[in-house]
Image (cartoon, rainbow over all chains, first blue to last red; front, side, top):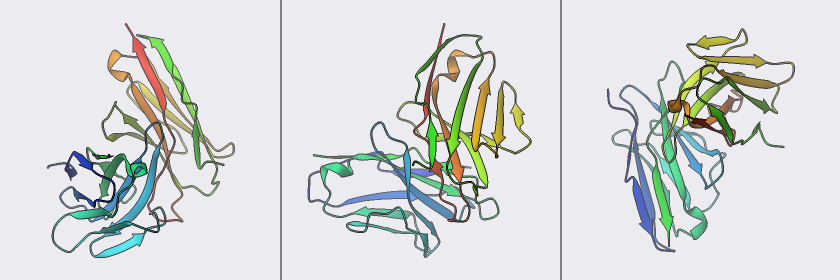
Length: 114
Length: 111
């Protein structure tokens, strides 16, 4: 059973470009969470999604950031017009529907904005 | 006030030592508690859940004190492979399934 998969593992973007981060949850998991980890800081919750629904986006910046989890395919975290402050590790986690409190993390995408 | 607070350390201990980490949380209604381990530049991995009655998994013991709102992790007989950052995690539940992470406590076990 493959774990949570994220790609790309490393992403470099220039200021003003768009970043697209992908997350495929573990097989059988229908809940997806995105977290951001800034250097020397703890993980910060961004958004919680189920298939085709955003359940909680209270941690998502109001502008430039969006997330989706379509019926088919991976969850996508999209950052438009990136700025240097967006440089961070972005982790995706998934959990099974009957044990939503167990979150398993992917290897993360390290975004560097130059 | 932060949702979850941890002493960042670092804790440098010799092999075989016993080391304890504490963590405090601010939301008294929090329902679920966990310890995760994160190796350098890797993803967090679930170490253990923390139950009110306390729980033990091999050399690791976790305790929860709801009255004082703190969680502890005890590691006995430290191994070199225990070197990592230990993250205290709280799920307030009533706000959904988002987790609140502490900034982590760094442990280095020295030969």
